[in-house]
Image (cartoon, rainbow, N blue to C red; front, side, top):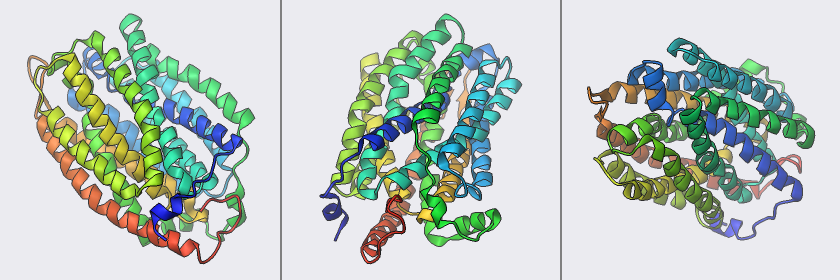
Length: 426
């Protein structure tokens, strides 16, 4: 039976599953907002902290590298504890790091704060994805990923415009304080309303943490998934950190219009992402990914070669480009989540998150080295970054083909023998 036939019988969400999806979506909202708000604040930070585009690229990269390191270090232990407890501990650390960002007064202190934030954020993301794979079968994950990825649009609709308004009115530090306040409330909800996620402990193996990590990073089927994630991360991290500076200084959009731009784009993302998730579950996930890749490639080339443009035209281009990007992220996330065995999910997601963060950090640093700030504050060679991004998308499409084949093979085999434990999704 092929993937399309399997997903025709779509299971329904229980009330508790809906609660978990909402919690994880809000959790990702704060994590993504913490990263994304740095991009529109970039033009302010470069000016107020007197830093160069290359230094700003290292601020972004520092977060990614530290998140990658922590993910690898946590991988050996990720499947040995209740995922809820792991999630809470590292989320508290993430909020502490974000508070340090709010108190930063120089390039050096901001760099240190981003390193601390990344150390904890990387594990939060991987623990969240492990919970998704434990509680939801593959036939539901397109919809689950669609809703969780709505955090991306939500951060644009609510977080970034509010953060920018706070930055413009009172100072950029308040954008980070907003995340800390919201995160404290969400942490309390997780503590009191989320049930323990510990069914995977019944599958406990004799591997010690180091052996568990080595198994995860050397198992050939997992390596293919890591390669796909590596290439997927490259594109977004190359363009996003410099988007606000490019928009203001190259495209001629006023800084006060940025909140409106992100708000409109975010609203459209909120509408399209659940639809993309439904389509990915109903049709072939890889074909949806390919369609999103083709659209993304076209719009990246158009966007990175723009000159002075109108607000309306830029908004339309942003909407189409982000629709393409989301059409890649949602099905790719659903496919990758199906790769690991139940007893390896925490370790796989930790390493996968690390690969994503480190690849993104390298991409941001490379982009910072390619881009040159001219005396009039415009950026040169942004189109070159666009071509590199398109190249990464082409290679990612090839790797995801093998990921899809692997998932199809695994789903066919799962019908021969039932998975261990009713609580662990296939």
